[in-house]
Image 1 (tube, one colour):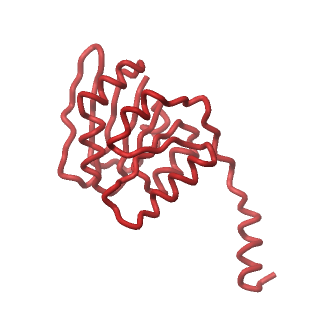
Image 2 (cartoon, one colour):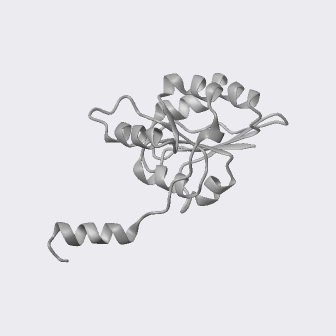
Image 3 (tube, one colour):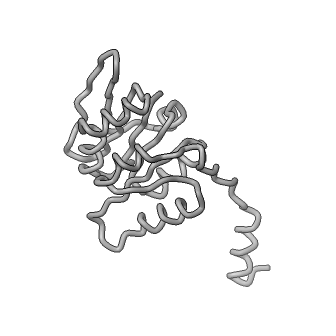
Amino acid sequence: MSVFVTVGTTSFETLIETVTSKLIVQTLRTLGYKNLTVQYGRGIYEVEEVSCSQFSVTGYRYKSSILDDIENADLVISHAGAGSCLEVLEARKPLIVVVNEKLMNNHQFELAKQFYQDGHLLYCTCSTLASTLKDMDLSSLKPLPPPKTSQCVLHIKEHFGLS
């Protein structure tokens, strides 16, 4: 089983340091995960790659697309960026969103909270990631429904008086 971590195009040093810490790696191993792939973005913290029979850690800054990593993961841990969240949810992968507590007036927290309330993901902070992993029930997560694009167009037309 494998875990993919992404911070998108941002830097989120605390998340990268947390997911590669001994506590989180041991927690993931206890849960049966064998591989951790980390996309660490523009941050200064680079992932130290480790490979042994019990657990491997690999990392990279950017790729042209992270879709393969998402699709190959059994669990995705992500920053709370809207694009990253939607890409993972549309791929129907279990998602834990880690909210960056250092951001003020954080719309990302609001997004994570709403998706959580709708049953689509779990969310936490770096300080609560270990307990979230230990307590998670991924079977309770609901897939994101397909977008209702026709309704969106009707709302736009109505809003601008085009109907």
